[in-house]
Image (cartoon, rainbow, N blue to C red; front, side, top):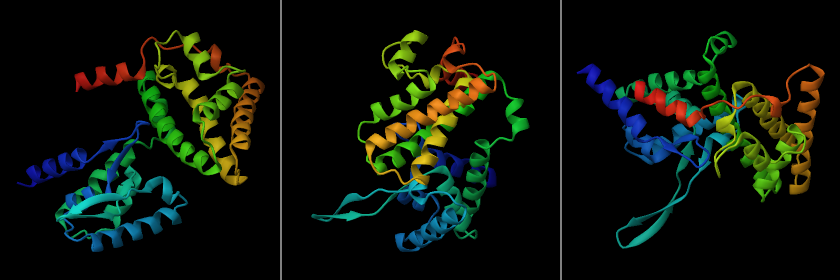
Length: 272
């Protein structure tokens, strides 16, 4: 009976998982509320507030983990707006840690989200022991997560043309190449994702670019699109200079893997 409950609840947490346009997973707070057997939104929203405080105290951005998501719902013949949240995996983890552990579903949720969060956090030794394919998958997941966060921060600075913004970073890192130039050099199909066709080292270079750009946008309180584009370009260029100084391989000189990451993930899924 206990094993059946655990399997049921794991399936429930998976069933309410959504994937956004950037490949990031999230869950809606009102769906998580039901999965954790909280009957009243009033009580569950108090748990969310505690989780947001914990998020802030750990120096993580509340807006990146608890995205406000208003909805219109029907109540009889009328409609009203209600508040919901798009929750990151980390936000779900904080919520279940602050929920009532006397609920069996909450206790299971604490275990489930702790395990899922841990899967995304590897030590240096654990990472070094991964195969190249698994390193690529790990780095790609990190670039998805951090690109999503970078886009939110860039939008707040006034960025509207995101193609131009991201190309500014690529131009700095790839000696003037845009995303299209990189795709053509790699021989990719139309609209095939260039990040899915990078090795772990090249992905790591781009992750460094993404993380450092967001940090500088926040640190210097950039407030217009042109300055944001210049920051992204200069960060890319600085990373390129650093690679050269360290005797590293320029990103455009790194080999393109024979399989893209989506193909590898499909193959792994079949094996499981």
